Amino acid sequence: MTTERNPWIALGALCVGFFMILLDMTIVAVANPAILTDLQADVNSVVWVTSAYLLAFAAPLLVTGRLGDKYGPKNVYLVGLTVFTAASLWCALSPNIETLIAARAVQGLGASLMTPQTMAVITRIFPPDKRGAAMGAWGAVAGIATLVGPILGGVLVDSLGWEWIFLVNVPVGIVAFVLAVRFVPALPTNEHKFDIPGVILSALGMFLLVFGIQEGSTYDWSGRIWLTIAAGVILLGVFVYYQSRSRGEPLLPLELFRDRNFSLANVGISAMGAAVTAMMLPTFFYLQAVHGYSPTKSALVFAPMAVVTGIFAPLVGRLVDRTHPRIIPTFGFTLFALSLLWFTAVMNVDTPAWQLMLPAAFIGLANACIWAPLGATATHNLPMHQAGAGAGVYNTTRQVGSVLGSAGVGALITARMAAQGLGGGAGEGSLSGPVPEPVKEAFSTALSESLLLPAAILVIGVVASLFFVRPAKPAPGTGRPAEEAAVAPNTIG
Image (cartoon, rainbow, N blue to C red; front, side):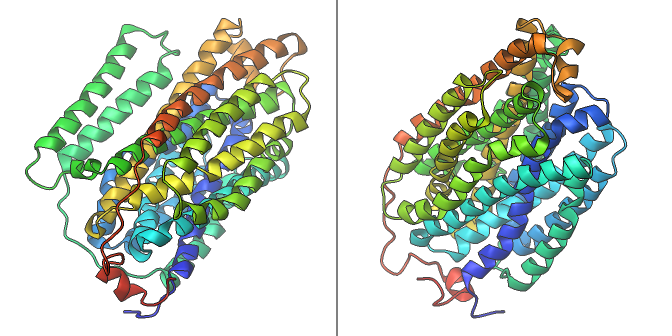
């Protein structure tokens, strides 16, 4: 085993795969109108292109985090990377919307295998007082991905077609695989038993809940839809109860939630996941359907957001280790919510692009103040033998939020369009391109009203952040567990 390994190099290697996952999500957002047109789909089906990915991403996260603990985060990461890259090729070759949705679900499974491993490795190779800086670097990668993704996606869609937004993952995936094999350390493993009933209960409950919310307007919110939603909520409740009574090793280790900051960070990241996902769909449809912007131009409107995130995330990361954990994320959530309200206020038919870019820049600063601080706070007190489980729980709550945000905003867009007299084909079909002049105002109003949903969700993050407490300092000589010292002695500091 390697005795001298710089953890920052390992982090950089992992960030290539993390970059690819985020790149994929932002690229798809800008390509939605093109997919809708080319595959002759409706807006609800296009929403499922995102929701299928997020659902397949979220449902297995509790067990994929444990897989990393049992078989090694590096090995599981490489398997997930292979699945994700192969599924990207399948997405590109999809002849219809149903095949694309299925391929996106497999892609989500690959992302589910990868994501908790990146966070677990950070937790295990960086001591608590250095994790803020590491998470800040991680956040900077997210900022770059959110800049490159929409712009690259716009260029690819405009010049080569939407298929290329998935094909671009193939070479990136190959590079990420080589780097991970070479630079990511093989960490010690722990024995775990897998709670299969828990997996089934959580996955089925989440599917029923998301399906009911997203398909509600399609079925006119019939009794069957409400029964589906209720069944999902009940199954998730049974899952939590089953976990609390399990005498073996539960899929969801509830003792992790005895740590106040871990619990609150999970609430915050769930709100963040929901808000980010719910923000993307109405804004890109607004820019392309109301303003008639090309995918490239609509992506450039959000360029300030990504640039500001990329600049400030490392700076904020260094501050995280020195400040009270409630200060920075509370500011970030508040700024994000106010920026979305600002964006909603200027979402008019004749708004110039620069007026939209200003709130986008402030959203970028808010992102920098949320991702790294929440991640560092959540992982600060995690015991090393539960690093994978904790990372799985944390990423699960983020993805659950993303799934519900995607489903919720899809249903809200449909409802607000109907309220503006744009239901059916007159509404959804026009989302694939510039809408007729007489209905532009109604479209703009419906989409701006939909953006109030993520703004409201962010208030949950504000409240959660306000209740963070300063974590206890580790006892002398315990700030860095022995397994970390074996992997990277004298390389952090």
